Image (tube, rainbow, N blue to C red; front, side, top):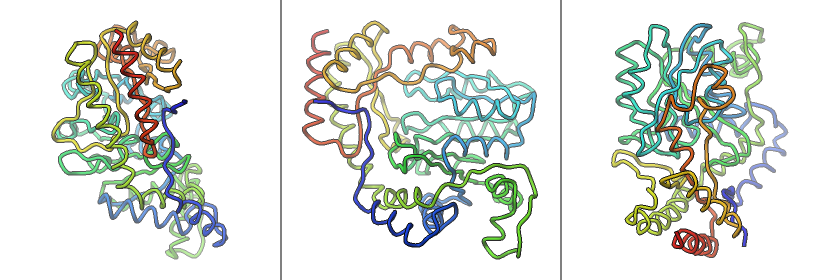
Amino acid sequence: MNIPGHKPYFSGKEKAYVLDALERGSISGDGYYTEQVSAFIENFFGVRKVLMTTSGTHALEMAAILSGLESGDEVIMPSFAFSSTANAVILRGAKPVFAEVKADDLNIDPDDIERKLTKKTKVIIPVHYAGVACEMDKIIAIAQRFHLKVIEDAAQGVNAKYKGQYLGTFADFGCYSFHGTKNYTCGEGGALLINQDKPVTIDQAEAIRQKGTNRSRFLRGDINQYNWVDTGSSYSPSDLLMAVLLAQFEDMQEIKKKRKAVYRVYQSVFKPYEKRGILRSMRIPEECDPNYHLFWVLFDNEEMRDCVLAALNQRGVAASFHYLPLHSSPMGKKMGYQPHDLPVTEKSAKCLLRLPLFGGMTETEIDYTVQCVETVIGAL
């Protein structure tokens, strides 16, 4: 049996909505389904303004522009993240400053954020790893004290909460991803959440998203023609993608429920091995309501992790590691970083193992995965 690491969950409405979008005859950006999805996010999550994008990467790039990043600015972010987070900063001529993560949840350490502050610091980008929230109250307090902007990389955090508030809604800007690996997907897509109550910011964001034009105002009927008013690019997704995404959102809680059930099984299975000191399972802080995006464990050393990973893969279970730290990557080394600069991040990346987890995972698939885990890890 082969168990994939992830697989999209489809209810069946996706096909009907795509066909409807085709029949409506408007499949480019900002059609009927884009409006429906934007309204859903704004109303359900409580967001001032949402702009759908072609990817989470593009949402991050727009947030970097709107934050006013320039050459010489510094942005504090975790090294345990995807390259898109750092690229959004580098494309503006600014410098990523990598901070350490906490060993318990692998989210950015607020104390290390403070240690990394300089006069050049302009933005903080926390990344909500595995759909479990960073300590946003502490991070926002630091930002307010030093007059910094915050961009939430909530690519993995859609429909997760911290102290009762949805991720992506704490900071100046929030960024979602709807890539094929995410809980709620349309294959490729994203969203920029604007939490500032500033019309000028929203106007700028709309122009950036529409190739630097005021086309959004034209589509609303505010003006009778549109023109080039700012720098920008093409960040609006096809309405066909948004048709798929609307169906996903309408089944959002059911998808979360199914993922939670798989997570709970894994949590129970790994407890005995944790008591034996073989590994440490991921923990969810009490103040967090996750979306169960991932399940991970940490082994004591890289050799043990690699041994288990290879054995599970040989049995058809697509277990995997995750991020290779940005600070010790080829690009990170070009910036002057060394692996020993962030020891918690470095060790965590070398010892982490992820298990398959997706909404449509069958009992047979779960049972087989558990059987393989018990065979492989039980022999250690």
